[in-house]
Image (cartoon, rainbow, N blue to C red; front, top):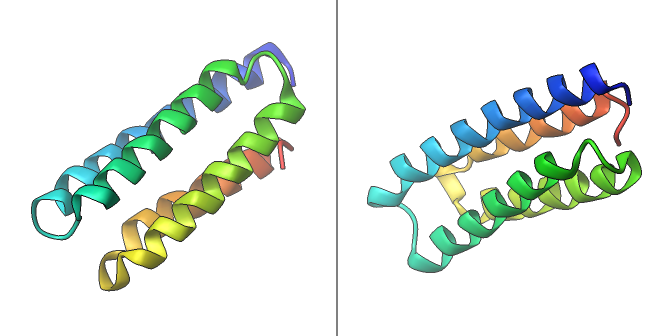
Length: 103
């Protein structure tokens, strides 16, 4: 991946991370157990780590993004009727990675 594309991918990924954290705040007040909050924080940390190393190894970044996507979808399923925003962010992350041919 070209350097300019790496920067674009990272910037767009950080926007998704920002929205994910915002959704966690909204859900945390009423809907998330402590365990779910911790799980989503772990996922956020993994995504942040992926974005930080996206400039180094494209193949590894793709695998890590896929793992974050899978974890987000699992977490979303556990949210029941409140899964929509987390599921949407996961899908957007996957589409973003696919648009840069990472997955």
